[in-house]
Amino acid sequence: MKNFKTYQLFFGLLLILFVVGGAAYFLGSKSKTSEFDSFFQKQDKKLSPSQLAENKQKQDIADLGLALNMFKLDNGRYPSNQEGLSALVAQPANLPSWRAGGYIQKLPLDGSGKAYNYQLSQDGKTFKVQPSS
Image 1 (cartoon, rainbow, N blue to C red):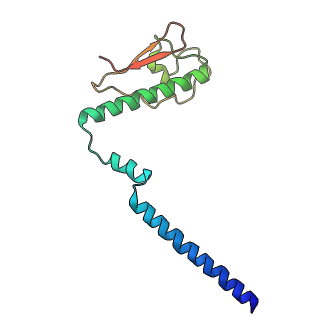
Image 2 (image 1 turned 90 degrees about the horizontal axis):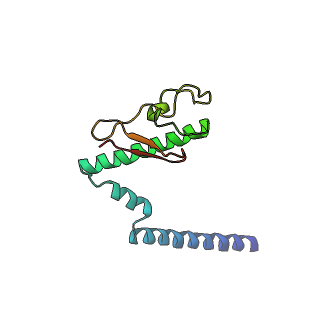
């Protein structure tokens, strides 16, 4: 009989914790918007064509930067100014470590439909990728 009362007390406390925890969860979630919900609410805004173009340009430049860094990891250097961004899709001469298939499927075009400009610094340590003007 004593074991039955112990189990009864245990399950009673468990039920109370469950009810109180559930109430706290639902009351807390109704009083404020979660980060997950607010992220997607921000994404629901309609972007203007110029904002979409600007976002695409930023993404293109980030993708090219990533591909250039992978090129450097494999080959020990960035593409020369003469090789340019085309070294990411077609293997330049004398690069045995060039990745089969390239570093990017195809080179993106900027908002005006032209290729992005690539400029390697004189010391070969940094580069710039910009839309053509």
